[in-house]
Amino acid sequence: MSTPPSPPFLAPDSLAQLSQRLRDFAAERDWQPFHAPKNLASALIVEAGELLEHFQWLTEDQSRALAQAGPAKDAVAAEMADVLLYLVQLASALEVDLLDAAARKMVVNAVKYPVEKARGRADRASEL
Image (tube, rainbow, N blue to C red):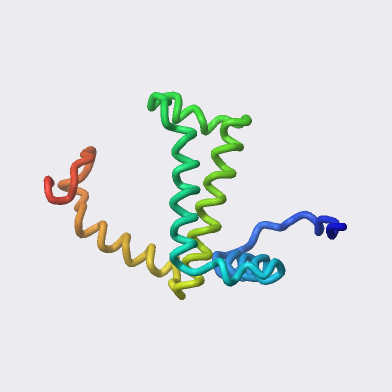
C-alpha cells in the first residue's frame, strides 16, 4: 500500500530551496544512482523535446496565444517545469550556481550583442 500524498506542495522561495527539495525527493526514492550528470542532461533534452512538441506546427500567432489560460497553457507549463527540474538537478550534480552562471552569461551576451548593433535584429553576433 502506498503512502498517502503529503500536504500541498508549496512553491520554493529560491533555486537553492528547489534544489534541496529535489535532492530530498530523489533520496526518498533512492534515485541518486540514476542521477549522474549524463543521465540528467539526457532527461533534460528529452523534456525540452516534449516542450517543443506543443509548438511544432503552430504559427507564430498561435504560439503567442498559448499565453491565454487553458489546457494548452497548462500542458506547456508542465513541460517547462520538467525542463526546469532537470536543469536544477543537473546544476546540483555539477555544483553550478545557476543564478551566478546566468548573470555571467548575460554580461557575455551584452558584449556580443551591443544595443546599438543588435536592436531589432535576429542576426548572429558574427553578422552584426
